[in-house]
Length: 218
Ligand SMILES: Nc1nc2c(ncn2[C@@H]2O[C@H](COP(=O)(O)OP(=O)(O)O)[C@@H](O)[C@H]2O)c(=O)[nH]1
Ligand SMILES: Nc1ncnc2c1ncn2[C@@H]1O[C@H](COP(=O)(O)OP(=O)(O)O)[C@@H](O)[C@H]1O
Image 1: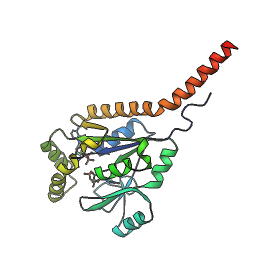
Image 2: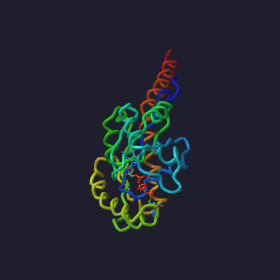
Image 3: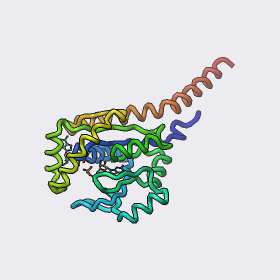
Image 4: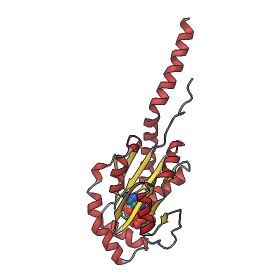
């Protein structure tokens, strides 16, 4: 019998939301739940925040370095967000997907569109995370305590534009209670993995059933 999942590729799981709705928190929780998940560490021209580590949260790059990565075809997708450049380096994502590992992307709607329209499109699951209210979004950005009032105002001003893209996503979740939101994300991932595995599972299983029937009739 053909071994199950022998040619299985990983899923690209896109998380998008307005800044402050909680997608980094949810990505962290999912990685803690399932350590086989891989996180696509983006490159950015944004300066690091306190506590952010090179290669863990982002690859911090100058505009020149970032531009060269784009020109050299090293980015799977890239976009300008809040006046800085952000992009997903291609090589680690392709290595993880080929090894059958699912990859989480914390990227904006522009990156989501590019990945859906790329060769990965077939294996993409996209999830948009909404805050329970705009007032709560602002409260979370302030409480995070990592951005100046000016930066927060800029992110709030852009939140409506980001939210306007919700209908392009496979799933839309409200991040009200963090445990409830995480549970919904686990359910989505579990179901999408079963859907992805449906074909290999069925073909392998029906082949073994056919062999068994053939054995009975001969
Ligand atoms: N297109 C794209 N967007 C990204 C990437 N990395 C981060 N972003 C988005 O850029 C926006 C700003 O990210 P960041 O500066 O870390 O702020 P935060 O989302 O408020 O923590 C968020 O919407 C991220 O999802 C990337 O590689 N590509
Ligand atoms: N469900 C929630 N309820 C209350 N606070 C939350 C919730 N989810 C995330 N937060 C907090 O809101 C802030 C923004 O979350 P973060 O994950 O950084 O958002 P994003 O990555 O979307 O910008 C953080 O301080 C985080 O701890």
